[in-house]
Length: 138
View (cartoon, one colour):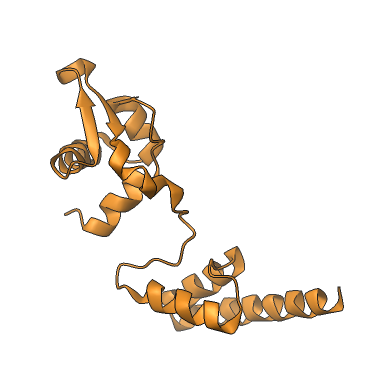
């Protein structure tokens, strides 16, 4: 089953002006043939992809009106639950970068993995604190 969040993520991986063959889409998305065969018609039906050609010669490109998807970085704090919007507002109010750092992403991933990764989470917090101290000294 393909959810809407996945559809947007796959569309973001495409350059707006390039035409892609089916094999190129498989390579860019890093999915198998069956998943690609499910995704492409889904994206075409939602008018996110434009199709050119028939069957084996068909090529696809991101529709121009959907090019804004590419401008949004994958590092943006967007979550399927919608909590990313709240996070971005809180970050802005606190004067922190609206886009989380790689270290913050690792801490969030360790938190989601559960209690067995408490040592990893604590180590990442220690690294984050050390980096903050170094930045203050500079």
